[in-house]
Length: 468
Image (cartoon, rainbow, N blue to C red; front, side, top):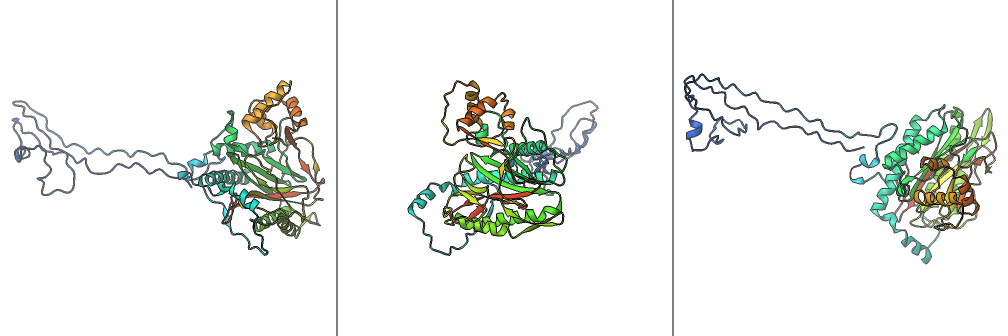
């Protein structure tokens, strides 16, 4: 990785020492000096040296003609060796924690492709209808080089930050420390702190960093006012974060465990996600993808404390398609068999994710709030006498738009005393409130997720890395 600046090494030659001839004591010219003056009338001609060794003598020393004085001899001029200038070399890789913007690590602004997969052959004739073709035409950006470079850049940011997370996160750290480390890494690699109005809409976090432990299946992030939670060696932690550029979100997640007891749980969910990716494609029915996911997931068991527990697919969550500035764009990909005959279409972007659990697989809302998201149908302005609601809504529009955010992000921008305004926006369906989702106490859950692009010639698993 990275481009290394070539060293500016000075070249030898061009600085040959002048003649070491001395003046005689009477002030006359030394023998032979007149030859350099009288030959063809040009002083310092370099064409008369039959014994030239290739040195470039730029001129001959002109000797003074002083009479009647003791003149010092002209000593041989020492060749001065030029010191080599030290060139500034770019690092060959990312720092830890990651702080080098990814554009400084890739020359020409071209970023690694995701994994390219061929589509599975279709068993039946599923000719596309005109409406599908029309919608496909409106999604031609998936073949645009500039669009793909930006999306691949966001994916590379995700890969580098999650690699650092996997290498450095250990039991004993607080979830706040982990979340802030991930988010600081994303902003640094995007070279965008996101503090000025509008900056967060150019690039940044795709949604609040999810750090859900054990029976908390999804949608937990540490927020102000909550008791900080420490990561334990027996915890199973889902790490879910997104990176966006111009509103196009790379949504990818993985699970960390420090106890081999839960290895089979992680293997089951990773297999289910990869099975979903393999079966996804243009004109594929969502119900077929869901059935394949469930079959893969529920073929595994986990032994916990001498008890064999089947891995179950979670019923209340699903994968989803992604649109610009919208993490959930309307289509869902459940993890269980269903009768949804909706088809995936060319030009669509999907987050193929799966959740597996040792619990019941049915979720309930947990305590607290994960985050907030402005409705895509919300008005540009609101009519209310509540000043805090107006001010807060202005902040949301300038910094997040319809991207999901959390209280930690508001306070990072210096916003305070916003709860009354947020309650107003939520009660009027201007923003949606997201809460933690819980399975039964004592259960464990895992998650793996990738973002895929359904391009005309292939599907690109844009967030794929060497880790999962």
